[in-house]
Length: 386
Image (cartoon, rainbow, N blue to C red):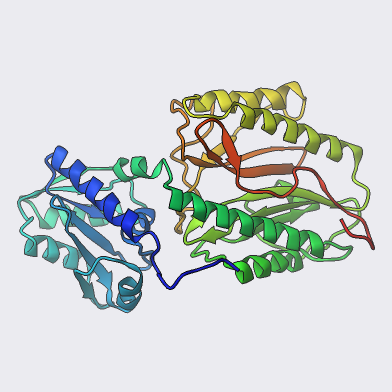
């Protein structure tokens, strides 16, 4: 079980500092206030995960003050997890956009320059246009990417959350491997992973904790759970996605019941070796596209697959539904960014219907592998332990 203090918001001091940094950006850009409604950014700045059912947000003024607009049903939760004290609420038969406009006017911002996150997954085109039309004297500025840039490098407290989540992933994988036996269903394996992760402290707010497939469905990265039952020689794809205080760490491992086909064993060994070369090259200042090239070329040279149409890794941090990952920093051939100390990534490679992955943190001179499950094909022999 994760060690939790009585403080329901252990990141409060960091969050207050982040808002102060955002306020400085607003002043530098001559923006009077910003409406923050991006789900991850609400959690990152204010400690609150808003439900996607109805629109909620916080207004940050250039002086650093914060004013929340919260669904009344969620006010008790907001009060218990957020440090923001100034808030107004609305009931379900009221229009939250009308409440937002009224609050902007109350704060004297009807003629101001107001920043909005036009890339927010909670701000619809319709709602943005309605707010702009209701405030014809206001000017709206796009602040997309400002907070995302702040989130790139994780603080020591954030990295510790990733470490905790990684340990939950390791526990979940171990529980699934222990449950592998002939005739076991996908549902039973997923239940074993969920039970272990939740009992140890996973606090997922939206994404699934376990992704799994067996036989022909090991290639379905994000497929649903079925009623297939395991037969000897079948591969099993196991992926854990637990969260600690909203921070996600992830882990993929291939497993097999009985004697594995020779090609499966060799494919896993090659994937591990290629990924190890990626890890050895990762350090601050290295272009992301160089790390991607190592993985992509390694797969091609080994003859594991003729093409690799997706990324070889992506940034992770706070995850709030409906998103399942932070794709602002992808390892692709065209990636034009460089690694920085404190970045955290889910790195993965796949071939021959199987996948392997780790959650890693960039350190001063390399990377730390946060997930610790042994990096090899997990073999379960009928009637015997692993």
